[in-house]
Length: 304
Image (cartoon, rainbow, N blue to C red; front, side):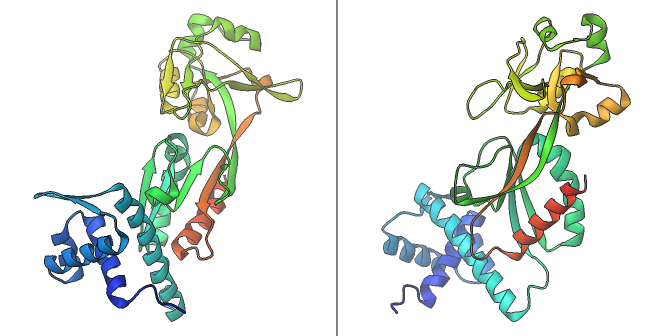
């Protein structure tokens, strides 16, 4: 069998990852216990081998090229898997450890995920959680994420999708708004109300509202002069302030409903839901920290 890697090359890859993570050859040298010149030589060897520039260098800083960023994410994952494999074989990985990068949309992050992470850290203090809270779709391969939570199953067959829950949708408005405009009694009444809109950042299209009618879920296009994009929580803030009706997840406003700060509307047409999935790449070897977090989150959400 032909050898593709020797000790020098593996060491160069490790130093490259240090430099990419720390943003400096000097910092990488300090972390690795070598000289900055040794780091520079290692990076040069890699660039010569690949025929690709990995860093753009200036007198003050370095930054990864597009090719360098792709190479870094792949190398980072490969080195992490090697470390995990050694810990498993030697028995050293009795506890999960390392950095776990997670991407989650704003509503699920704030009302489901983030409240659980303190408990996870208390149980597994050697795992560092790097949380990306955004509705932007991420690229696992290019951006180095371990897990993502999304509101629909992926088309990408390279990803595993585990359903976390079907989140119930609810229509609501504040008492102040309803005092001024009255309650809608049937779906057709929504045409007379300020229906706060949310635009999907990926498509720029407004999300239709979904209701039950004659035993089936139906999408309904509503209208309003208030439009939020990027963050669906903006629609809830507007509704709390008396600006109009919001159609959102019950888990976001359940406390508002319990306090009477918001009032549920048209409950006879309620009961629709949208799913949330936990996504992660197919891999023959999932790190212990990823497996542990997946099991933790699935169990916690199932108990709600």
